[in-house]
Length: 337
Image (cartoon, rainbow, N blue to C red; front, top):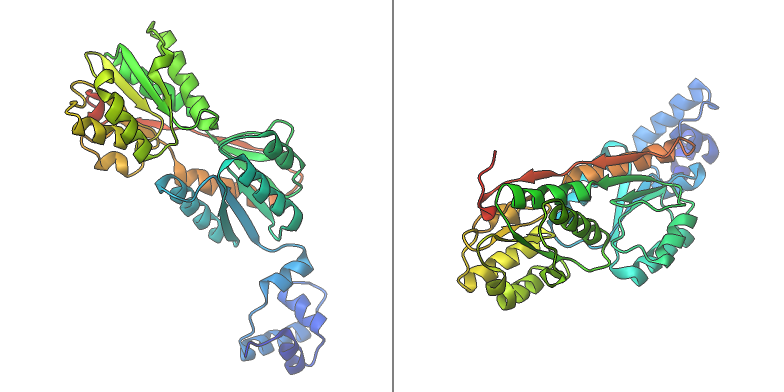
């Protein structure tokens, strides 16, 4: 049977409130009484109930992380970085996910109404009006990952999506000699897809290349959908000076597999690049040129900002911008360097 705070109080011959003050570091207990309580705690092996302690301190020492999905290396690396940072700072981490605007709205509404969290870090893939309103009204300490909400009081950790996408498309045009670049993105309303598409189109204009809406495709960031699309279209994409920018590595891997199945040589007939630099980028054949995103660092910095906000609610809002980095491998047809 678990040892209770009442057991400690009886052994030390003090009140339950005195034990609680000792456990919570109060300076209202004299040294002799404190020593007696601490001795009883050691003898009984008492472990304070963190939830009861949290109710007294109005602090649970639990923070939340809400992501659009939990599947795949991109999200697992964010979680890994966040979890390590939370533990180093003395917090426990609770992780959840939501797909789409309605699910995001429902989850955030539940957090707003019944939260035991000290704060929450949130990444949303689509900023619907409902999600925007909930985030703006959320009274918990809040950190946004990879986006900002106008009118909301929050800290944020963002990836410079446009810089990363521009770097890889500029590499295709300037280093690989691409004259035509196909774009394969995630959902059209996805915030990352929007940023990467805008950078793609901007580099085409900058390089004097023709933009065609027929060269733009929107999928779901998945391997299977990209593979199916490429099996239908890859022969039409292939040709002298042709390249393809997939907005994540998983779709790029599906396109590479489909190109091999259709007998299209990469990079000989079609240069292919991705985004994120997950492990799949090093496992494809040929290895994938991509953009490295500091995923674990993003999770860690978000939790760091969140815990700072919990400790100091009145400090000025902070915005951390992390820079992605172009990683050149064989799939683009140009050597690194």
